Amino acid sequence: MRETDHQTEEESSDAIPKVCAIPPELEDGKGEPVRSGTCYVVGAGDFGDGCPVPGPDDCVIAGDGGYQACLDRNIRLDLVVGDFDSLGYVPKFPENDLVRLHPVKDDTDMHAGVVLGWHRGYRRFVLYGGTGGRLSHTVANIQLL
Image: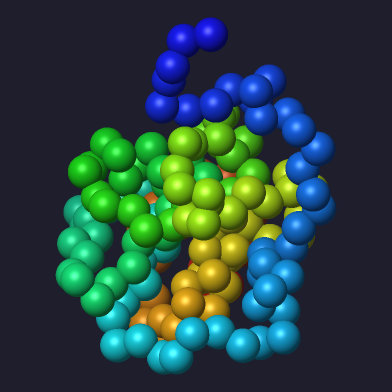
């Protein structure tokens, strides 16, 4: 097997625990102290004319296919979350900064990114790539506002 920058679905087909958008250790509502930076949550949809330019106090979370969108735009990532059905593979990313969701869930991967950012202490969010794909995802991402 050759070394690549991602795992195939076959390589990562271990039993995926059924998880919700909130990791179990955060279900009690305890998160980190409130941070002053911005949390950018990036999906794989349309970006329009904008692109995140994170500062040192900001956090960038990619939801599933948003991982590739960030790579294509040279945007640094702090966290990757998703079931990775859109991306087609599970990125090789530090274990503590990769949240793999079960594919059977009620919320979008971007929603999970917002929840994780909230629990990391962020209160200001900017969403990129949340529209232009599947209508159901576009509506769900608009509801996040």
